[in-house]
Length: 228
Image (cartoon, rainbow, N blue to C red; front, side, top):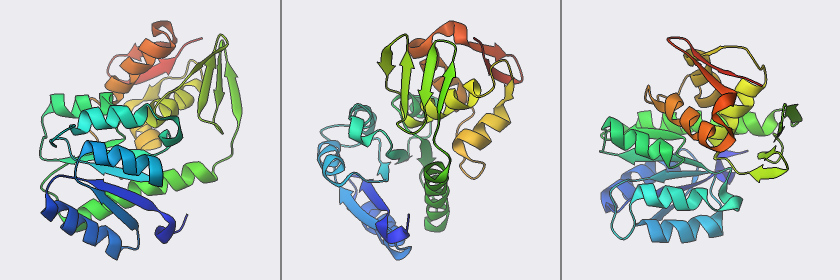
């Protein structure tokens, strides 16, 4: 995936942010479009199908959390990466962001070069996933279709946001193995992407709600494992 083919949708109600961040990303060769609020963002996302959406939290008409939730409910945008870029750095705000289906959470202020590096890291993992071997894995009563990003459990199709899918796919790749938190962060989020310490816990909680609590075991102080 070439940079000029990589579409980024930048969503913020502050014109200065749209101009500065948009300029820096465009200068790197990315195809950047902008939206001033959540409603406009959803419309553009449906039309343009961006590879990455950079989303503010505090916006008029529809805030970033609700916007993220609505985008995650649109099947054709399931593979789109979403990262928040916001001045809201509180733990509860970050948890709400990941809960809504975000892939990353970046707090302002941030130097343009650092932001560009984070964007590159996110898109690099997307490229690696696209180039990885597609396969269908059967684990107990669960079928994981890595090609179609689809989960089937007891003949029922379950749609998961990208990071929840990747986390389940990793844990289920070796049932019974305890995956350390550092390994999970590295393989699911990438060691170049800095996320909050509670990120894994939020995603595990969501998987327990959707797949079943019995399939996931916490190994205190170490990490998590998938149980058949």
